[in-house]
Image: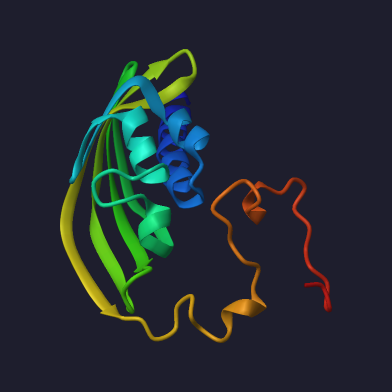
Length: 177
């Protein structure tokens, strides 16, 4: 039973990090990392706290997500975790989809997050992450955030005002805006 709990906790940790990047929530991102974590993320290689600032803050190399994109999602796919006591190695396939602010394209990137995790007092956390890029492409943007239908849906937010933080969740009634 403990192995199943560990696998779920490891998966939840990786999902927290992806959600934190998409909501620009530095605290949520930090909760997925061990205090001594190191991130190898292409143009960024360094301590996880600096990576969090890189993605959500002033940006550094390549600029932050908010500076570069009008919309983005980190989608998690296949996931495998090898657990050995208080240490685990996980591989999680990802699809990153983004709409750059300065270009009428949608970027699609596929790869894998290869993580070393450790169990510590706060639970499972990423100690080391290496992002493996498998492919990348762009297509012309013809109906993304510029679509005439998007206004019919609940708008997302890059902070804690996003509906995913609402407790309890409420639904809109006809006529609500």
